[in-house]
Amino acid sequence: MTAETELPAYLPYPRFLLKMDISHTAKLLYVLLLDRSTLSQKNGWQDSEGRIYIVYPIAEIAEMLDKGCTTIKGALNELDAAGLLERRRTGFSAANRLYVKVPPIPVVQFSDQLTDGKPTLIRAGNRPTDSRKTDLMTVGKPSPNQTNINNLIESQTKRASEGQPPAAYGRYKNVFLSDAELLELEQDFPGKWEYYLDRLSCHIASTGKQYHSHAATIYKWAQEDAAKGKAAPKQGIPDYSCKEGESL
Image (cartoon, rainbow, N blue to C red; front, top):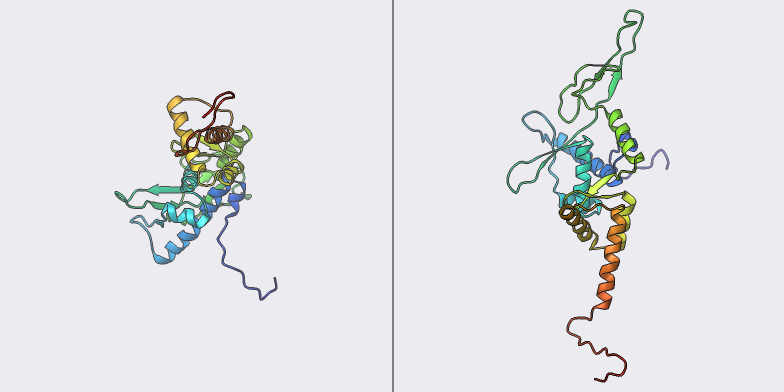
């Protein structure tokens, strides 16, 4: 690069995402939705409350990120659970409105001699998504109605250290896979990995069974299916196998 080098088109990647315990797909999805929100700002897409929203069908998102629709739905649920996204229905068979949320950036006002001994105030700025200011908060006594991004990151990091998977997939959102496991399934079973996710999800929901590793269970089922396919004779071709001493 030189001073005159033109940069290619790029997406905004907020720094706070680097420390969030969500999947890589969820982070990329948030970046994509945040970029689309800036376009909505320019075009004046806002509701009656002045909140910026976007309309982005899941199929188009999946095509943009080169992922399956099931993966995108799981990533949307992650962002929703992390407090970074809000979805609202607009009517029957109509696409949902997506509201991308931006965590507030606190501005600390340090105490001086005049205010020494008094609690330091932190004033959060306007949120670009809803144009509404948050309440004043005191250090050590956060308002119970405000989402603290640091506490969110800490709780998610604790979940990861306890061995809990980062994301849920399947029809009933009860199949837990890491990013690496999901990527391996997509590579090893192209065109069928979503079938196995939904199959395991329905099985767990209907039987209540628990598995030590959902990824290992899917691989076991795939191996069993492959073995059955090899053992069974092909349709339309007679089975001429016979035991020793028999004749056709």
